[in-house]
Image 1 (cartoon, rainbow, N blue to C red):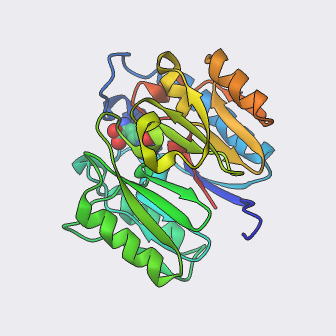
Image 2 (cartoon, rainbow, N blue to C red):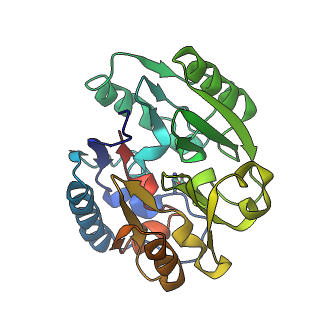
Length: 257
Ligand code: CIR
């Protein structure tokens, strides 16, 4: 993947149990049928970006299991099965580990006392920023860095104060372009990037996804959309309102590799 092109994606359909997913918002309970329709369109968009998409069936045992991004970090050289900090999500890794073995020979895992959710990990080439959050702890982040080092990659730790995951407020769009919102705007760590600033009132749009020169962006954030268009990207707008009710964004819904 030297040219940073992604070829594949893994998603999991939401189950009816999603209405019991973890939520820190006051936006109400997701409408399951609408969520399914939105998820289908999301899969179409991934295909539109040239990806071969593996759609896993819903897993009713785990209400948040459609947010597959959190349970694995897929790098060009190895896969890392994470260890979610949220208790209700820990079991998701067993199912994902079985799937990942179909795609990777080198599969590593994060072990207790380490916890990691990969929504806290942002890939910039062979370098990985790892957010310390309510879900990802220091022991987990250090394990990830050790694993990355073993495969010739590297990473560093970023402290989070307010948002759920690192990529709730940051998205890397390649070509040194970084979408940034809120607490990360004042972080010197990110000064070297071309910053695309997302206004606070549109903070949900800071979680967007670069795939092969297209950018998936949530529907309804006109200022952010203009900024990303002005930066020269082709965009695909998607309505993910029902996943937002569970604090989930566009990136959380897939593993891209
Ligand atoms: C959770 O709280 O774990 C889910 N309701 C949302 C996970 C969102 N994932 C992400 O930002 N990577």
